Length: 228
Image (cartoon, rainbow, N blue to C red; front, side, top):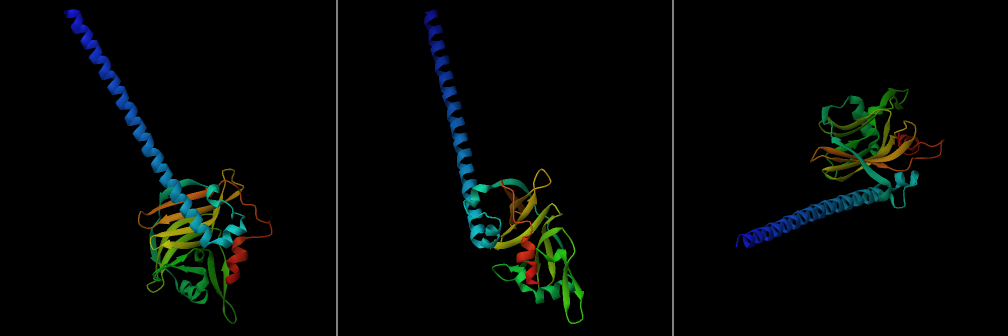
């Protein structure tokens, strides 16, 4: 009789062990499935972001020969919080804004503008009109309310990167494109900065391939400063 009880207990324990292991496998599979689903969502979101940016900023993509399968070239490299440093623009900024509206990207409501260039520029008074001169290698992306003069800096970078162009994906998302220095501190790589004003975070997508434009060419000189 005792032997039978021992056998029954062993069978029960063995069955429970199988159930536990099966449950563990099921949980692991469910967790893995959720991870895969989340990864797929992130990949889809990244694909949409890159393809929309490609459509909005075709000139920049052509300049760096990124037309084909551009979304497969860029990898998410960094995420950080926006600067959100606020201040007031100068009188020179207002003069530059009035004289060179093409340098500024209005948001969908046309209340704010994206400013990628003025932190590098100064106005010099000439005989007949003001001249604009580039004075700094640093780059800054900011939004400005032209009516009030309030300015909020979103991201800043020293000579290690350049902000070339940008667009408003919507009132809460800004996309900036340009170049960033590679790990070797020599080569420059095309980069896309996704700035989310709602979450106050920045995602940096960097191209796997280095930018190799003609040495005599410079995107800012060819496509931005010529507007001045």
